[in-house]
Image (tube, rainbow, N blue to C red; front, side, top):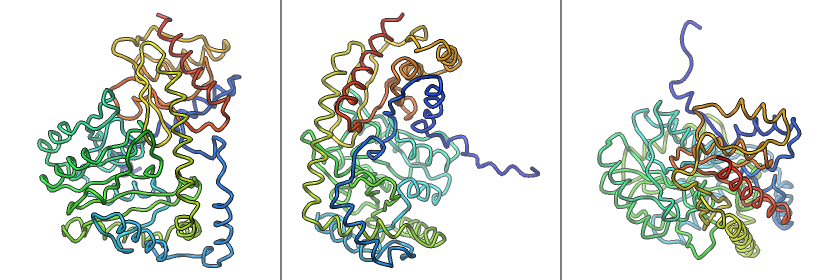
Length: 434
């Protein structure tokens, strides 16, 4: 073409969580029965939505308004209900005008980053969730900026690393938090969040907290919403129903904006997000209209508690199996439905492998295991070809620690335990192969 139409950040739009599916599908075609432990879709892994939530959705479908457009920012009644919940917590306040709906948090994240000036950078966690890291890198045209989360401290952020990164890089305009965290399952305690807020206040930054898993917390951890600790610092929380109802196919997420009146630049930026939504007319009406009916039902809190307990039990189950494997650290989560395993220093090498299930797979695996491939990705490909379990390498999450992330979502109890055991067998065999 006479002009290059490719955005400078196009190569940053990577999503290994789904990209690895193409490798898995090819292995399936070669005879592997693949167990998919890569994507956080509870429905795909066999969980069924509670009948009473389905009934609420069916009742709302009878309302003709659920079939039409809604306000550009979202359904007014739903935004009022959400603002009411925010204000009941104490801390930073919100009105219905401070809540902006999107077609899922993927849409929200894309809009948030595309609405920023290219030279304005957001500092995010490492390991990083791919949608955030790719969105931030693509908007800027550079590699995503990250702060360290310490796997020896349950993956909690290194606050001094955050301070130093902010202090010595004045392009950093905001700090991204993900708590409860994807991919690690870490839950940031109140005192740590307060320290990060103080850094944002000192350096005149905003804070974004992805709280999509805020109602899936267990193991003695405490739910702390950003609004409770933010004070007068500009910020926003990202929320949704895909994980907690669960209803991932609803594509229904929202941003809760705080303290926009405290900073005129932040206020103008938020207005630009709302203007962008007007260009799309609105987001999906039906799931928005269902939210108040579910949130205000007496069954909702017990529903959340039951699911949190379920994931806690599964985390204990996985930890009981994988923590016994030498050469790795299995890190028990306290939130969300993911868990990580990290290889200890110097246990991985390029000569390690696992036996493939047949000769065609062996040839395909040899094609995949190129010299420059990250060591944890080599293991993941070998695990898929040998044991038929698809997990995601930590190197795909902007992380220098070699390891992998898997889900706690498999609803079939026997199949789930077998998957954990296959991971353990794969690690033992791989580390012993060289």
